[in-house]
Image 1 (cartoon, rainbow, N blue to C red):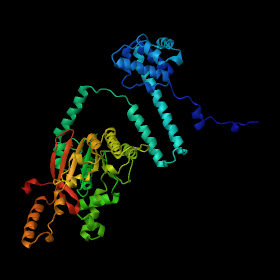
Image 2 (image 1 turned 30 degrees about the vertical axis):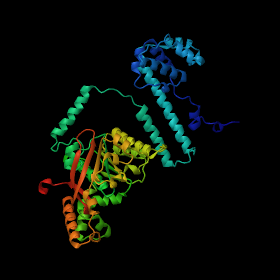
Image 3 (image 1 turned 90 degrees about the vertical axis):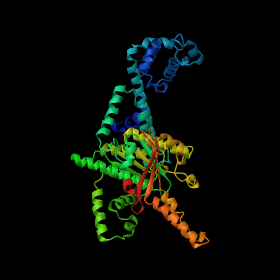
Image 4 (image 1 turned 180 degrees about the vertical axis):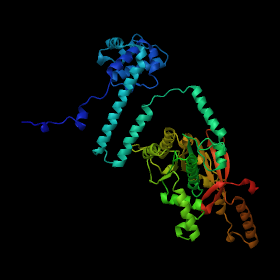
Length: 498
């Protein structure tokens, strides 16, 4: 006797395998009938529907053939398409030309074409979700043994994100009056702002003047050779943005409505925090590490650390983080705490999304920069990505960087809304300090040393931020103050300098 418990359960994974994938064949036939009756129905579905969205392969092929003729300015009806369909054998398995007659009788009206198209597209999305789910289950069972559990999570998230961004949303025009309203609102913000900054402040007066601040959806590249101060400058900008968010919140008597996320792939969170503390407390980071500080300095160090702990500044020091993991964490942060700025230090240490295997390093960097730009647009926040420069800078007499010095420069330059180079002439001049052994007399050595000291005096504590590309504004060089002891950047006091 078979009991209830002995019967196989048709639920769980077994139940899923017995179900038919979502499809709406009636809607497919009704839409094709509407298209063949009146080609203007194509305008209602052409911006989101493609042949591969159809569950029935023949219907998809027929839709693609109709779309081809309409887009070429030709009439698409049973008469004009007869020769093409008969020669291709497309309809052989569904009854030949008689199938077209069936489609025409299935047509309810071209006014419903948009609804038919959306029903077809929705069924396709559901089929894609099922496929993604099956892949996740198969991976979890060990079908792809080269991926760890966390990597499989990232791969699943990446597949869902790709479906949502590339195929899951319909695009449409924005009426010009709405675009104008947005532009006027931005201009009004700039007019009412004391510093004429519409975006998030960088903490650097002259940079904000040129850019209007850090704007949502922008990808900004900050590049430089090692020891130029890329991380210090990016940290300065991130800290200033976080402090601005905190100041605004305190002024309104609430909590910050955004946060700043730093992805530090090279330095640990503790090292980065020490840099910020050193800068704000004006205590040398080297002396902090050695413990070579007095009681007053230590007290100041502790006091400043309490003040900084309130800032909406978060650090993720995961090494070689993947693009999909970064996107997931940023989306979660935006949902839970708000997100106003992302800083990545630096992009050459990142990995592309899990499951992708680029053929070359150039293609890999291209995927990463495109992904960072996509994150900026999706989350509507500025993204600052640090980048290394190639060694060809060192072979030139003038070592100021150019766009061509960017490693794998093509994709970086193309995807970025702004490209900035940080350059310190003092660093290179310091390496050219005259050596006594290079001169045949003390007099010549003394002359060379005086000249070197004169040049060092001109560039001491000075840095250049070269704004080489800006999609929405002017380019040029911004002079900055740099204090090496605290690895601190600040505005240059040009008035007292003169």
